[in-house]
Image (tube, rainbow, N blue to C red; front, side):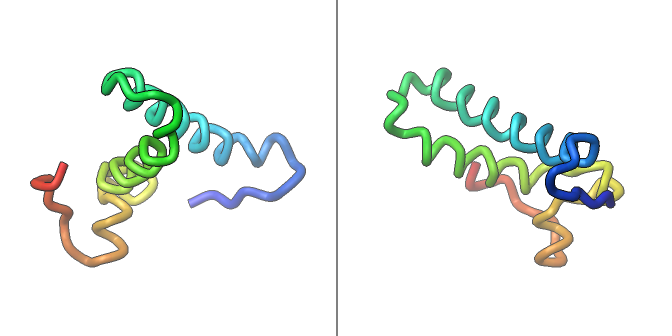
Amino acid sequence: MSLSYPHTSEQNKVAERKHRHIVETGLTILAQSNLPMGYWGYAFYSSIHITNYLPTQVLKGQSFYQVFYGREPTYDNL
């Protein structure tokens, strides 16, 4: 796990990549669902929700959900 320090562009690349991923996923959700930009908040919330369910290398193949709740996520509600 890496730390990110404010006002250091080299360190903020991690945060910037995560932010960009969330924004791009949210915009993709809006575009694919043919919703107006007024729903951007819901799209970005959904983007974060989906991202938390995905396994990540940082957590050795576990998802944030799995680490936080101690059980594997179910994908029925997606």
